Length: 191
Image (cartoon, rainbow, N blue to C red):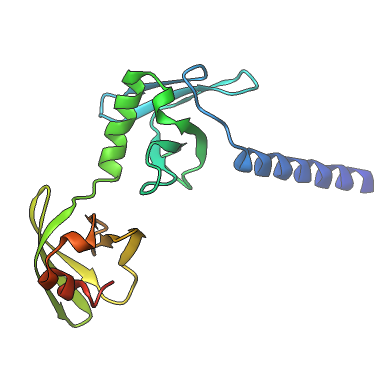
């Protein structure tokens, strides 16, 4: 009986070890081992063949950039869209894939990382722990609200800032010093 308990514990430990190895291993996605296709609903699906020769079909995948601001075309993470978003694999260089696949993935990335650029700051008003922004972006005029004091305005490069509003939308200031002195003064409280 003791041998059975030890063997069961050993089997459980081996299964846990294999699960951890699966999670931390990096599987590279290339044109040779992956086929991306569009779904009827406008999403992207993936058929992936692992090193072990097993083919797995994913009805839908999520596409993420590992370095969205500093290196947007390298290290693209392909993940399961539900649950814990477990990574399926990593694309080292987007340009190494076929043009059709690149277009499909860039479409998904543009939706995920939609970030209008603020080209003019009309006004920022602060009230009761929130700031109310009235701006003109490269996509048109916009008003949004930002919670104060919670790190929602932060630097993403030299003189470049990202703003997250209450709804999870992102806005970018591409170069702070291309703004007028009046606009910079309004931003002084936030940067």
